[in-house]
Length: 193
Image 1 (cartoon, rainbow, N blue to C red):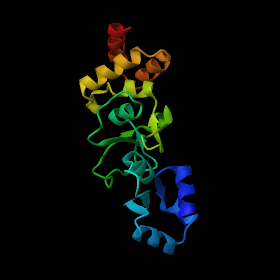
Image 2: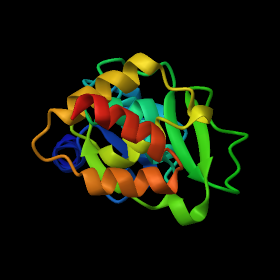
Image 3: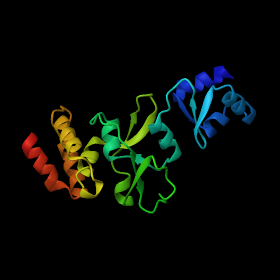
Image 4: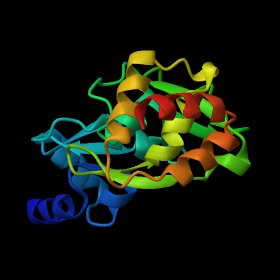
């Protein structure tokens, strides 16, 4: 049983859905592993290995599979902010029922035509893969007044981006146009480039 668990953990790292575990283990096995402290239930239907710190990014990505990490959380995951977010920012498509989302999540909604643009996958510190928005999309979105992103975080992210060799100015302007932040983006770039 533990061999199967260690194989599964080498494939998926430290966080699993019940559905993933059920492909290898019976309900009896899951109960036994929980009793033996081999796995711990982090959220309903989501388990972590007990010898790992819970990876909240992965846990909430599995719990809210339609959600995409955005804004402050995206900057943190992309290593463009060293400030761990108080709440994890997640974007959902407009019309998604966000009323029952965990208080640990700051839920945002986006028009469907923009929701899927710029989604990438990144690895968390625990090695789990999560979905977030691209750096250029995030840089355009953090300038929207309704998102209330700390100006220090914005300035530091733009400074770090300006020093990159592989920055994509065209993509940044494309997203700035869509999110109506082109004037703010131009102001930052005039100072930094």
